[in-house]
Image 1 (cartoon, rainbow, N blue to C red):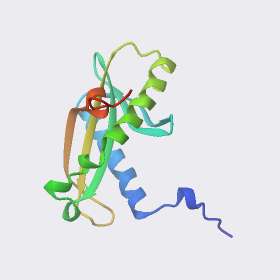
Image 2: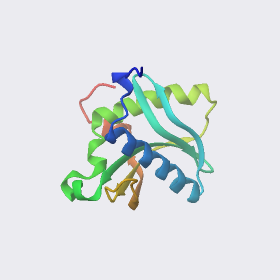
Image 3: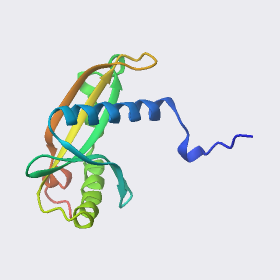
Length: 144
């Protein structure tokens, strides 16, 4: 008898997301980044990929969409709302001291577009270095 954990259900959306994270990690490695950790969880948030370049720790949020379902008005990066940005910023505060990080920090988004077939094939990757900062996550007048 198989017991289904409704909190970890393997939905098509989750499979697509995991695929996008694998593609993004390979892409970042090819660009010269060293992957430090994937799926870091802290402060009620998850950071998809934590990597580094020579002098910077990069926290990466990966968003994956099927080409037919993504329009310019609804780019995957649009799903990284200020609230999501704040969660990632909070989680990054837990990572830094635990891992003795004394480098600059940057927050990137990687969009992965697929063809919608099974198994999916990558159509395009869009890396957005410095996609958000503390200032975009906490607009003026918003308490930190």
